[in-house]
Length: 474
Image 1 (cartoon, rainbow, N blue to C red):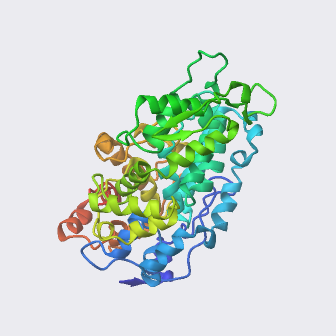
Image 2: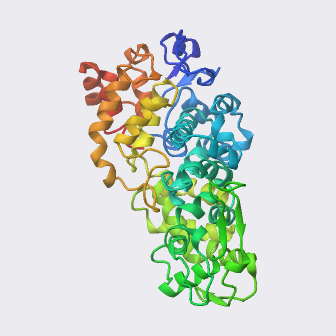
Image 3: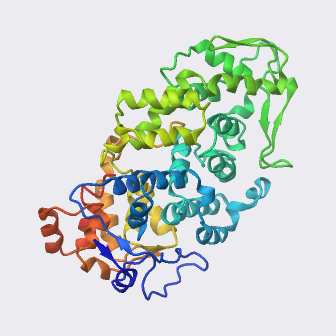
């Protein structure tokens, strides 16, 4: 089913609000409409294009479904794996207006913590809604959970902004070993998991195990990866001596190695000997052992398959992705390319429940909302327990459906508010949803006769559509 761009805009369903002059915040606006005709799914089941759009992006937006059909699956995957080739200048101009998140590390301390968190959250929402580099945004969220840092702890209030920019975003589609090292020496991580106080001053001093334990359990080999308490202690010894300057010192946020506080003796981690005398090079020796360990490959593979296939991913998929991780020495792009072409992925339509952030953003994308990404949206994310950078413990937000089932009432309330233009800073044009063809655009497939009848009977058909079980899944 084809709708011309002119017809689409005349119904008000284009990528921007047709005829709308709403100025939510100077410089923060959506990208210009695409020139291509807008296509909607024509099958009663989720086809391959809708499936790729569900999983590689935050959901349908404007003419994207038709563009994926025209490109073909392989070309679309290849495009998204190379975000540097995608023109995202319209989004970048908007994000540059949020000036504080681009400040050098030390200057972040000049801002009030609440202002900085609100700015980082706003940028996160706007990128998810508007970016054409959707897979990059999905992977930024994946690694943000994997290397979770609660922005409320100590200097993390300021340093997490730099971690998001310089560690997670910079390496999200690069190399896992490089990402792991960047995280290990991230000023925010050194604060969050107490790496800055892991030191040996006296011969009988015991190392601080906090980061070492999470490095093994969460970031690399996993809880069933075969490590012991002795491995935790030895890992902690390897990591002694690293410090980050506090916000009360000169050169705020600077990471430094203090040789006099480092345990420079021989260690053994997971059966690998780490010789004495390596100094600040010991961290690289340690991370080389951990980043490409077979248990790490399996741990990362299982998490990727859980994120992109199903809450309980098939063992066949996990094994293949783990082998691909090892074969390509932790390079992320080949791993994702293999994952997205596997039968287990291609056949897993609507097996995932959207987490609250994914639900909220997908609703904004599906309705072509104009938004400032501000407190009107953040309030709903807080109520649903999924506000960026605010998970209190190191494991990050859950990727299973069960913990999010308690958010269904607030999802319905959000759908009602969005469809009534009752969210401050966000507005949609309701006119297009009088056109029945747009139901397939939102659902990613042609509705059943029962769904269609309910849609037509509803007093708020858009809210019903967004709160429907089908839209809750991807």
